[in-house]
Image 1 (cartoon, one colour):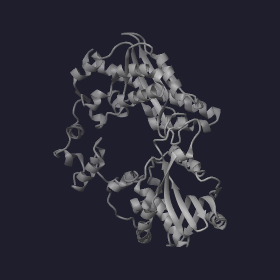
Image 2 (cartoon, helix red, strand yellow):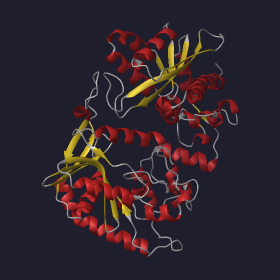
Image 3 (cartoon, one colour):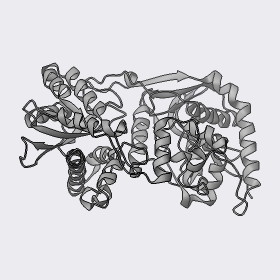
Image 4 (cartoon, one colour):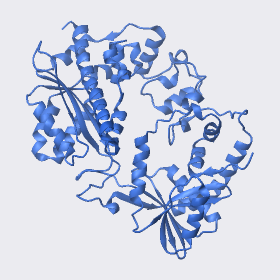
Length: 497
């Protein structure tokens, strides 16, 4: 086998788990990545903006033939001082591209750009790998820095790059890691040399499967575990799951006598013994008795911009862009539906959202949601941004009723909920095999992150594609509030109200 070429991303993967590199090479079809196109786009957008941090720069475009990038970098290094973005280097089959390289008369400075709001250990590994490659090529690396998002930055009319980004000098940490990087590279190469396609490495799972990133090969590496197992226990901390796993308590049968949280034991008991639904009628009646007509069943969708798009917003602030609203004005009144979906080009998107909501919910009735924290927090933020709307936002919050509470408290629980109180588990448990309530039957968008990513993508789409996406968003959000109406109906059914 030829000496394996390591990029900075493959090196960082191996810092997490060396088997990842083997799996990517020989079992790529088993990768189930949760990283979306929108996540990559956020990183790309942040990276492009950061290139302008130090003024004029020369960018090296990606080329399938890496030698082209290497040659262009070599030429630009001769022109000092200058700023080179995506400068590319290779030493002993270790390859890296530096996001921003300050090329001074007496050496270079490395700036690794991240779309995160904090520095993680893996980012230091990433930048230190670049330091290792450049140093071995004979370059004097004067400084190594991480560039990341300042989550306290509030956008004004214009974007201020110096306000948006923080820069942290990690040179000392990088220097301390240089011998470790050499040892890691030697280990990775020996590991890959001794494990070809026919000799799969044996490596047990561990907390590293989720730190710093969730591994896309988790399903493959756990395919031989009993089903269900400790990792299927809803809301249990991953550290606790691995504690039980390492003790050999893996299957639900192994766990049924363990000293665990009562909710975990209940999930195990219902699964093993196929218990009948548990329904605390008094607790559910309390929810029903608290309702006041008109009933407003509402659900918000929101998105997050790493680089704030709108004045007076912060990086990664939740921007509400859509709601669906089902209304029952009085007992036995027909079900009405209203909805709002923002224009992606609206610079006043949050205010427009709020004003439409105020218009659609004029009366002092119950505002019914599923997971009160989310909608209530958005309303509070809107009131802070727009003091003239604060009273109406507070009215909504004071009238808010959370249909999730009976499921979260286990006052209503069935085996099919699998320990979860997410509406995506609760709804099919209450209405099994009902295609009208099946999110998988929706045409385009099936869950919240897909809705957020779809809205974020709109500006880059054709009018025809935009129309299709907007229809998918309306369809998805409408089901969320119709699902709440059906849950309310089920509450009335099981309590004979």
